[in-house]
Length: 402
Image (cartoon, rainbow, N blue to C red; front, side, top):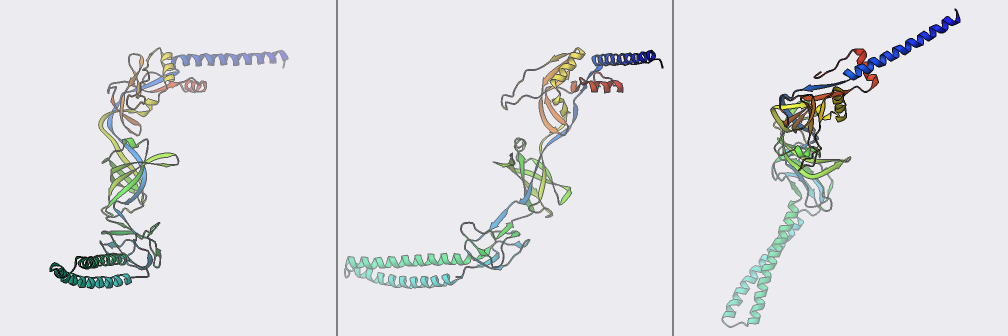
C-alpha cells in the first residue's frame, strides 16, 4: 500500500473523530440548555395519618412486693414455691435464729413477777394511805411507800414491753405474705443464712395480680415531648410475634437514663393480661400513638429536603423567578419554622407551613397551603456530564409536572 494513501486514511480518521466529538458536545450542550433540568409538582393528598413513637422495654408486675426479713437466721422450712398462689398472712418460710421462743417464755415469767409485785405494792400502798390520812404515818414515810408503788407500776410496763418485743422477734421468724398474690420468684434455699442488716436478703417476689401488668420502656429524648399520659399504645413480645397487645401510657418519669451516650426517659404503660399469657421480664416492642388526624392534608416528606441551590439553578435555566423567605425562628422553641416550595405563575415560592403528625413518607400540613397548591416535590439538576449523557442517549425528556 502506498505510504501517502495510508497517511491520508489516518488523517481522515482523526478528522472524523474530531467531528463526532464536537457534534456530541454540541448536542449535549443543546440538550443541557433546553432540558437538562426538570422538576416535579404535586398537589397535597387527603388521607388519615397517625404518628407513632417507638420504644423498647420489659414487662413487669404492676404491683410487685419484695419480701425480706426483719430478723437474721437460718432457713428452716420453705412452704411455697414459684407460681404458687398465696393469701395475705400466709407463712412462706420459717427461720431459726437459735433462740426460738425462749425469750418469749422468759419475759412472760418477768411479766408475771412484775404483776405480783405490783399487786403487793398496791395493797400495801392503800393501807399506808389510810394511816397517813389518819395522822398515824409521817409524810416522808408515806412518800417512800408511794414511790415504791409507782416503781412497781413502771416495772410492769417495762416487762410487758420487753415481752412484746420478744414476741415480735419470734413472730418474725415466720415470714408471711403481705398480701394476696402469686409468687413470681423464690430467692431462698433451705439452710441459707438470712441477714437483716446492711444488705438485707430478698426472700420472695410476689405479684399481687398478674392480670394487671406494666411495660417499662425507654423513650428517646427526641420523642419524649410527644408522649403524654393516657395515650394509647400497642406492643408485641417475642413469645407471640404475631399477636398485638394493647397498652396505655400511665407515667413519664423525669429522671434521665444515659446508656451509650443516648438519653432516654423511663415510661410506664398499663397492660391488661386477662389470660395470663404475658409474663414478667418479657421484652416488649412498643408503639405509642402520639398524634392522629383523619381526612387531613399531607405531603411527601421528601419535599422538605429539596436543595435550595438546585432549585435556584432550575429556576435560572428555565427563566423562572425565585421568592425566598428570610430564616425565621419560632419565638417559643427557637427552631426554624418549616418551609416548602410551591409553583405559582412561573415562580418558585417558599412558604411557611405548620406541620403536625408524621407517618412513614408523609407529614401532615395544618396550615400555610391548601389542597389546590402546586407543591414542588422534586428538582433534578443534571450538571454531571455522565448523567447528562445517560439522559441524552436514553432519550429522556423533561418538563413541568413530570
